[in-house]
Image (cartoon, rainbow, N blue to C red; front, side, top):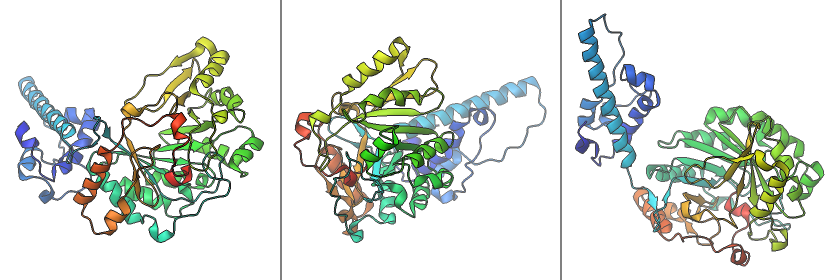
Length: 424
């Protein structure tokens, strides 16, 4: 395929990419024939020159042929495979719109969006004991606004979406939101961070709607301590949700916020959960946010956690290969099915490879979890802005993203939202 043709900036180039996707995902199909996307697409939605290059076809088994004919056909198939691969490389190297990139070369491909500020727990590290004033409903994002934001981000190459809260499952329309986001072109993964209390009854419908990943918060394996941390009695429901989610979703992770003299002594017990279960347990350093009464006396560092784990498991621990933009140092115990890891936001931050931004339930864009700078996308949309103007607002905010956060010593004095109002 002529590389010049595929580098055209026609707004329909994403259609080409979506039609090529199924071909690349199935090497068997590529090696035998070209197939069309099962989703009907009008001819007018594809550039004319591209329709001449890649035409939907219906496969008809060829008649028997002699060896010379077979060699000729094999040569043609090889040339067509090369053409497809060239098209895919062009598609991957040049998105429809440029990525949201900051001044340090970090391209952002991961959007975390809070669906609500409401939660059915009152966790010590997230919700102030006195509660919080909720944003009036008219000031929260509507479902259409949520989907529009996802569409704009996806057009710039942001393919991974995580839905947070509050607790996302308290929304009656949660499943419908997942379904609508899944329908957005370019979105490849949808995950949720949940406390596991109410979501347990909706696991299958959420999977059917397009949810692929589930992170479940569980800070103690002791029911009484769990109630002390969350100020709610829901331990058994969470354990049932974890069990039922295994095997249903592509990944199930258990998030544990570790606090000194609260649950630090349970770290090895959590790792034992991975012995016969395909779970990923992640230990998160306690982080300072508004109203969570963070003190260094409660802080239990990655180094402290590691010493505890190493003392228990020794040379049976081995490191797993990091994936690009990963926030977790991942490990496995030899002979265990699952894995565990550490999110070291405070002591060994991963700012240099950060590829994520957040949108709060009231529509504010936060380019850094630990920064207090925000831009209202809600106000921009409600002022009548076009998608191009919304994109420009996002791009400018991302450009202002700092190289790294201020560090635990300074963050504890920085005024920031409570975690419940940011989105876990």
